[in-house]
Amino acid sequence: MKFFIDTANLEDIRRANKLGVLSGVTTNPSLVAKEGVPFHERLKEITDEVSGSVSAEVISEDADGMIKEAKELAQIAPNITVKIPMTLEGLKAVKALTQLGIKTNVTLIFNANQALLAARSGATYVSPFLGRLDDIGHTGMTLVKTIADIFDRHNIETEIIAASIRHPLHVTEAALSGAHIATVPYNVLEQLVKHPLTDQGIEKFLQDWNEMK
Ligand code: E4P
Image 1 (tube, rainbow, N blue to C red):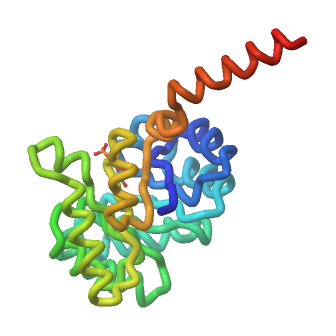
Image 2 (tube, rainbow, N blue to C red):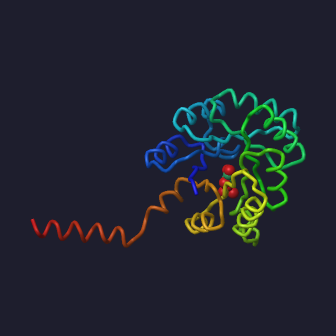
Image 3 (cartoon, rainbow, N blue to C red):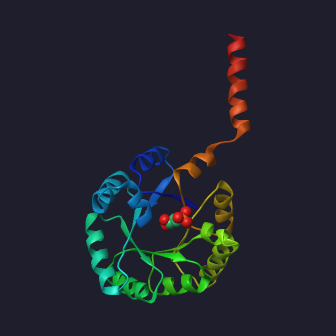
């Protein structure tokens, strides 16, 4: 399983990129709005920083509008992936964009049929939102596993991005459940690194080393 970072914050992206684990970035309108910067300019900055897929979401609700926005976004850099919401209009847009060779990430996936349809319309990625399912008392991870089983059984090449990740256990379980990618906020990435026994171990090694000296 690969790691994407789920943010539009340039500092977080730079910090994550320095770790050598970053394969891409996902953004959404809420994340971009939080930054208070012009959307296209920020995308250019992100694509200058990261060579992997950078997902940028459309805000139109009709296929024609989505396609128009997607074409503009795709002009920013060759590694832009256009994020399209899972609707009937969204599927139409995915089909057209696939024919144009523009990569798509179908977002706001909450059941397996949505993922299967998105894949069949040509989506490069599907993004099931685990945390938001957990929030309403469902088990988000079951969805990732179901989608992975279906894609595997039918030789579907669309990649699964485990999204709306809230904590380290989500990451481990997403990897076990067959997600190709986990898109994580920077704070979760940091949490993945930390273990109290690692810290204690470093402290003890340094203590012993200094005593020897
Ligand atoms: C993924 O592409 C989305 O941007 C994101 O994971 C949504 O996460 P949230 O449910 O924490 O907003």
